[in-house]
Length: 146
Image 1: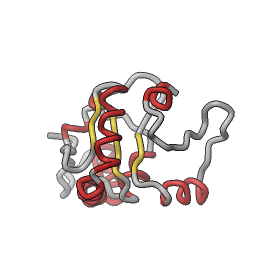
Image 2 (image 1 turned 120 degrees about the vertical axis):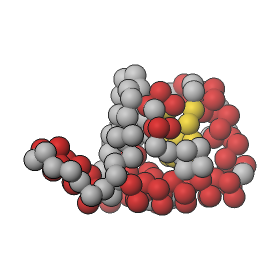
Image 3 (image 1 turned 30 degrees about the horizontal axis):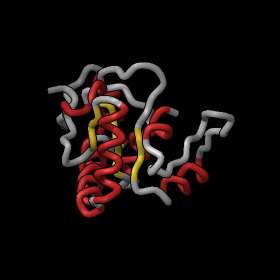
């Protein structure tokens, strides 16, 4: 991975690449519970509002989460809740910054967890799907529909 070559000071695990099997379930939860930061990468080019469910795992478990700015998640999350990066160099710089600034990293991670659980919990997501399917007005305000 380019990031690992670019920044040898960063220690991280990569699953599902370079003959390292992906992990799921308890093994995944155990791996992220030993981590302070997570990068929300998706296959291919970033697309507006696209993310796998990994973002729920990272933010929901209180990790400082990095995401490509091209996902446009900045439409509903601020840099006080998640870390946006522009390219691999910016990502490397920001990882180094928050590796050193543990207090700020913890604040952002805590804010991210709180905001994500408040606005993207299963009740709200289910209600969004049902309101679209059965064409009714929900009592919830969906922050992605501004």
